[in-house]
Length: 341
Ligand SMILES: [Mn+2]
Image (cartoon, rainbow, N blue to C red):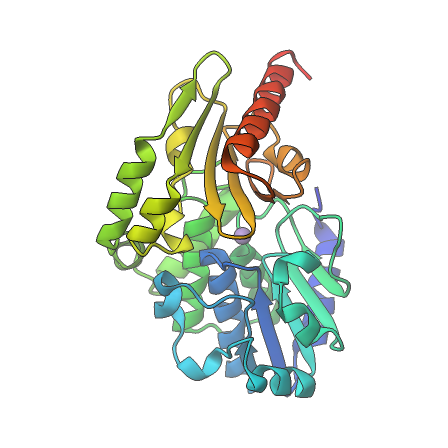
């Protein structure tokens, strides 16, 4: 666990503040297929930097998902990483900040863009095999990177902004599964309490994120649930997203958000898995653990990674074969945990 406490924590925050404060242009990025925490953290930090007079731009390896576009106050904040403008912007920037990941391969096409820049990492994932070099503020005990951005702004003494408060709230809300997952701590709740007291409306945010589900998502869920398999004895369950339905419905990766919670939430299940075929790339597997099994370690065996209770991997091969191998390894991992190892 990378948990910077006491003085070390303040030193890490101060080093980040020194690296990004008073700069003319800062580029912010996050991991491929940004989630609520990735988007929320970078928008909150961008809002803070902009309030201080810094030109802050978001350059992500993949577009900001539709469900989090409402956080972007102005389209000019976001620059398409495939555009010539992005290259020009990065060439002229003072520093790059990577949020919600610390791994080189997770920032995809943005990596060459920021290669020559001093880099700052703000992240709550356990460190991976290919860490991004630079000044860093990491804390894997934080529920969300949004918490770390909050700490940073707090240490800096503000300024706080309406958009920043909303973005940090969304970051923590989504990464804690609406304050249900085990990463929800007194600290996360204290932070969101402060955000709510400053004006964030939990009800409004909830409707914005969870009350605007495109209809196709229910059809995709329906056909995926039809493929739910449970091995009660082994304590594992898995679901497969049918590729033909995914295409026929015009679904996007966003539509799979939270789907792995279905197999995970089956009574008696320790690990839930979701399988999806990605054209020309292989099989994307999501791992969710109820606590006994470290799925970060499990996913790493297949070239992936993530958190102890939530991880993913992209595995080359055919669906049947990958599913067989992964469910086999998962059964073993559950068995091992049950035998007390
Ligand atoms: Mn996160």
